[in-house]
Image (cartoon, rainbow, N blue to C red; front, side, top):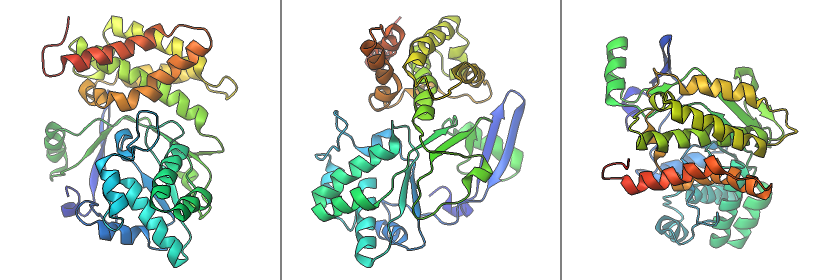
Length: 347
C-alpha cells in the first residue's frame, strides 16, 4: 500500500560512518497485497511465465509447531485447508498455485526461501509437503517429487524504517518516499544452484551460486544472528537502544567474543570458512553508528529465532562434551527481557 502510489519506486539508503548513499530502486514492476486480493495473487502465481517464486516473510510466518512440523491447528492453516481459493498463508498460496499449474499442465515454479531458517529450502519443502498432503495425497506427492526448493542465505543488516528516516530522506531527495529502506554497505547472497525451470544470471550481480549453502548459512546464523540476539537482549537489559551502543559496552563486547569462541567450533570444519575474517567484519558492522539498528527490533520473536541462532550451537557443544556457557546466557537474557516487557528492566 505504501509503494503502489509511488509506482513501486523506493529509496535504498546505504549508511556507514562515511555518510549515506541514496539509490532509487525501480525493480518492482507491479504490486499485489495478498489479503486484499488473493485471487489476483493466485492468478500471478499460475502465470506460465512465472518460473521462480521467492519468499521473505520472517520466521514466524512459516507456522511451525514446537517440534518443527507444520502447525496444522493454526487458525490460518485450518482456514486455508477449507478455503483453497482464498488462502491466508504462504502455504495456502503456494499449494493452490501449484495445484492449478499441475491441472493445467504448466510446469511448477521453483520456490526460493530467503528467510533465516536452517536449511530454509528443505524446511519450506517439508512444511509445504505436510500442508499439501492434508489437502490431497496426490498434491502432496506432486510437491514432494516435482517442485524444487533450493536453499539460500541472505546477509545484510536492514533496520526497520522510522519516521525520522522518511523525513531525512525527503529533505535530501526533495520528494517524499513512504517506505525507504535503510541498510549497510555489506551484502552477501548465497544460493543453492538448483533451478530446473531456469534462472537469471545472478552471479553477474554478486550472488554466490553454490552446490551447498549450509556452511554459509550456519556461519551467518550462529555468528551474525546469534551475536545479534545476544547483543539485543543484553543491550535491552543494559539500557542500550541500538546495536552500536550495546556493542560499545565493554562487557557486551567481551561477551560477544566469547560467544563466537563457543559457536565457531560447531561450524563445519572442512568447508573452508574464514571465521576470523568474518567475525572481524561483523565487529565493524556492529559498530556502524549510522545504522541505528534498534535492539528492540532484533529482540522480537525470540522463540522463533533462538533455536537456529543459539540452541543449535548449544546442542552441538553439549554433544561434543563442551559447555555452552555464553550461549546459555543469551537464552537467560531473552527470558529476562520477556519478563521485563511492559515494566522496568531488571538490574
